[in-house]
Length: 230
Image (cartoon, rainbow, N blue to C red; front, side, top):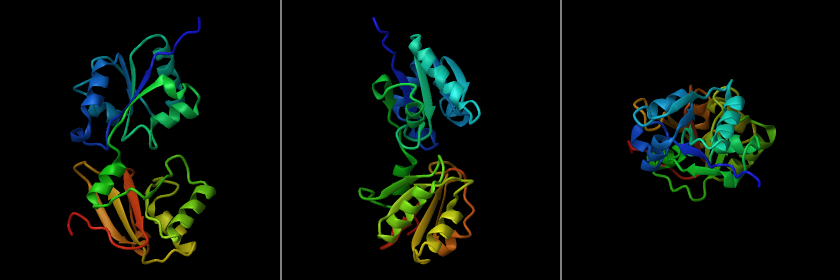
């Protein structure tokens, strides 16, 4: 008889503040025998972790994810904790892309995404907003799609690549592609954390933006978005 893979738990830790961790996420972590996650995420659950921990880094990602799956196969209760929601630029994609498990072999505990918080902070309804993530690289195809989307008047929320494609490079690229320099933009950094900061300006202003690694860029070709300060 073919062995059934135990569910691998992938848990969203929210955007960074303990206040945004869901009770479901806490419960999953409390019941886990082994918790994998970036150090900052493990710290968020330091009062809930009862079992072992394994710190995820860029260098050990491949081996750690494979190990997590193997442990689940052996019947261990394994949790992978990731920032925000696992389904957007999170560990769910990392696991599925590596073909380590099938979608029906994971139990995903949804988390509060930084995108949700960003929309809330700016008073945005984001039903029709176009979402982009450049966390895994800024391919020419994706950059071209971004420029086309903005030029067509569509609002955009995106996760920049802090090194290869940060907000200032995004602004420069869009301007070179013919997007109006007066297009409104917002940079929302470290949302829900003590050093949260929101900068409003135009694409021209964004050429000078120095951004944090945890940030969201909002581009609004037409109309206005209100901020908490008015």
